[in-house]
Image (cartoon, rainbow, N blue to C red; front, side, top):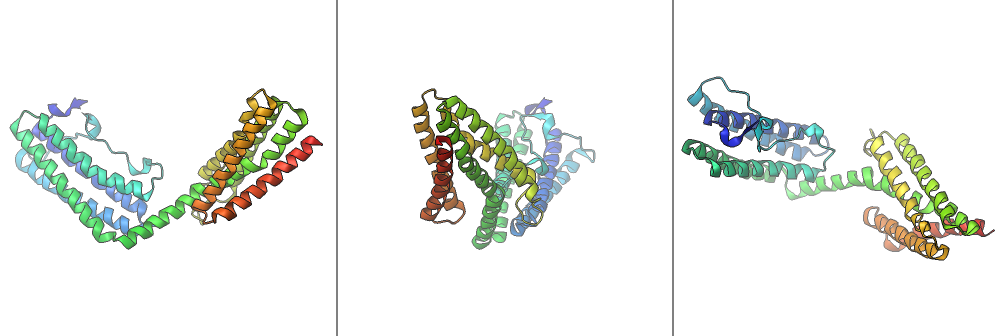
Amino acid sequence: MRDFSQLSEREVLALAIGAEEEDGRIYLDIAERLRENYPASAQTFAEMAAQESEHRRELLELYREKFGEHIPLIRRQDVRGFLSRKPVWQLPSPSINEIRDLAESMEVETQRFYRFAASRATDVSIRKLLGDLADAEAEHEQKAEAISAKNLPDAVREEEDEHAKRMFVLQFIQPGLVGLMDGSVSTLAPIFAAAFSTHNPFSAFLVGAAAALGAGISMGFAEALSDDGSLTGRGTPYMRGLVTGLMTTLGGLGHTLPFLIPNFHLALIVAFCVVAVELAAISWIRWRYMDTSPIRATLQVALGGVLVFATGVLIGAG
C-alpha cells in the first residue's frame, strides 16, 4: 500500500478513473435496490450514475492524450488514506433517507479529499490536476441536487418518506411492541405469585428470569414462523423474530431485576415502579406509532397489566 502523495500524475489519473467507475456502479446498484419501492429516487440515482460515466469518459480522454492506452490497475484500497466505498449489497437494509445521505456525502467526501491532497502536493502539475478533480466533484454535487429536485418534488419525497415510515413500523415497531407487551405483562403473574408466596426476593428473581427468557425464545420463534414477509412486506422472519424475542426478554427482565435487592419490601416497591415505567413506555409507543389515542392506549395497557398482576398476587397470597 502506498501513500497518495507518492503517486505520479499518471497513477492519480488511473486512480480517479477507477474511482469514478466504482461510484457510478454504486449509484446503479442503489437505483436497482430502490426501483420497486422508491421509483423516483431510483431514477435520480440512475441519472447520477450517467453523470459519473460522463466524468470517467472525460478522464479517459485526458489519460489517453497524455499517457497512451494502457491504464494501470490502481484501486482505492491500494492507496493509504483514500476513500473506500462499501458495496451496496453489504449495507444492512438502510432506510431511504440513509441512502440519500450516503449518495450526497459521496461527492462531498471525494471533493474534500482531492482538495486536501492538492494542498499537500509539491508538484505543480499534480496540484493542478487534483484541484481540477475537486472542481469537477463540486459540479457533480450541484448536478446531483438539480437531478434530485427534478425527480423528487416535495410531494413525491413526502410520499416516499411516508412509505419508509410504514415499512419501519411493520418491520421493527410492531414486532418489538408485541414482544415488549408480552414480556412486560405476561410475566407479571409468575413473578409476583412467587414473590408473595415465598417472600424471598431471590426466588422471585429466579422465576422471573426463567419466565422472561422462556417467553423471549417462544415469542421469537412464534413471530419468525408466522410470516415470511414476502407478501406482507414485514421484512425477513429472522429479523422480526430476533426483535420480538429480545424485546420480550427485555420486558420480562425489567421488573425481575429489582428482586436482586435482598430487602423484600424494597424490592417490591422498585419492581412496582419499573412496571409503571414499562406500561407507560408501551402506551407511548402505541400512541406514537400505532395511531392510538393517549387515553385509550393507557387504559388498555393498564387494564391488562392490572388483571395479570392481580392474578399473580391472588395465586401467591393464597
